Image (tube, rainbow, N blue to C red; front, side, top):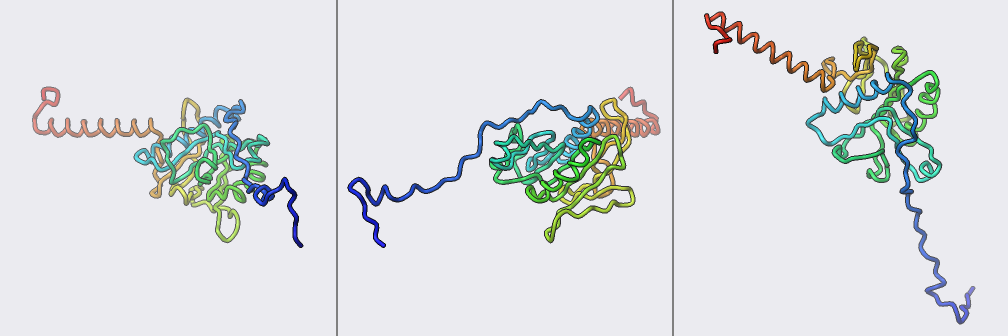
Length: 246
């Protein structure tokens, strides 16, 4: 069937303009003013962030943060559906870039590779339900863990399998869970950090050594230097020399 064009219509104007997808929103919020559940939750988050940064201090190809919004879709941003994992890490990205939050469409479509949520009685159901489903189905985050800083036994983790969804990780004989993405164990450690004594979630290397915080690493280096100096002093005294005169 032919279509007659009127005098005011041309074939060019009859053609519809090519559709373009709407641009992602730019008026993103990066702080909702909500504090962490407790001071212990804040310390627990920083322990994970700072120890991973210390372990990989010579690397710039990863980013780790916590209590930061992750924006992953225009609809989520418009609806102010905030999602801010307590700890997350992303590999193979520029770790020197400053970020107020993690905006997926500004990061080449990259989502977190590891997420840890620090639970409380009021958030446990969401952390192990709605959030777990989001990280499994939308984020496709390979390793997800939950831990309650006030209840050490409330520690679980899942690994994403290509054949399906999350599968529960089995602990080793120490109760640690393996984080395949980072190549570290996650397990509990009892001690005092920032003047608060508690059971903390910490990283351990493949040989079972605790991944140290920067101040712990500095103290370890100082103690090693002191031990070397003492051994040298003993050797000098054994040769009849006074170390203080040298």
